[in-house]
Image (cartoon, rainbow, N blue to C red; front, side, top):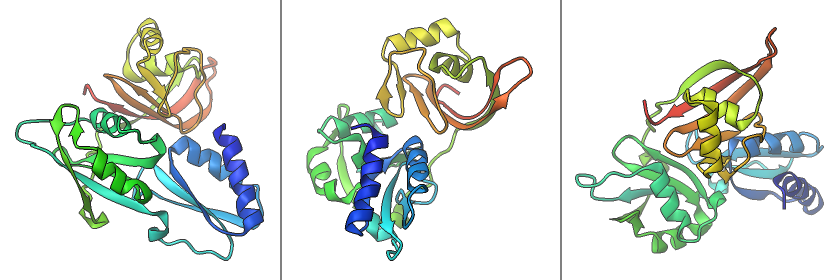
Length: 249
């Protein structure tokens, strides 16, 4: 079911059953859509929480006006990954791939964070026992998952850069080319090769247009998050504010 339709159905369910409903982890684009839909409904509200302040992926509670959500209502469990850090290094992609390789859906997993040494992630509490039992390797590295309290979460290393730029169109190949300073041709090759994801879903369409809060991930390069689409220049180019996470800097 398309996300737009599922949120519309969820809103109707909250209105009809007069009770709060909790979603899985949503990305910024999904949260943007959720807000626009919920704001059209009288008598229901929503709150979001990702397990810590500043989280990118968050669960949402959609609820009638009588309800006041607390952090514990979001049912989020935090894990630290115990691994031989003197002899091995982990990456975001390895951690996510190993968890999803155990049959876990993407919306079960929240942020994966590191301070450069310790690796931690957040997940739906409903699936925490299963994840702990199933995930004992990240790549070829033997690991053990330990539940931690939220006050034990590390402060994530932020190596991103906010950039104001202009592009000829909102096509994903144009954004990848501009964001990582590569040729448009090479950007198309990456997309054709399945190396590019939009909001964690693979795309092989260079002409696909991106929107506000979309997250574009490029294997081997990093991520681009669209913060603002800010009008057109006199020369007909589109003004953008993006946050670039460039893994090669």
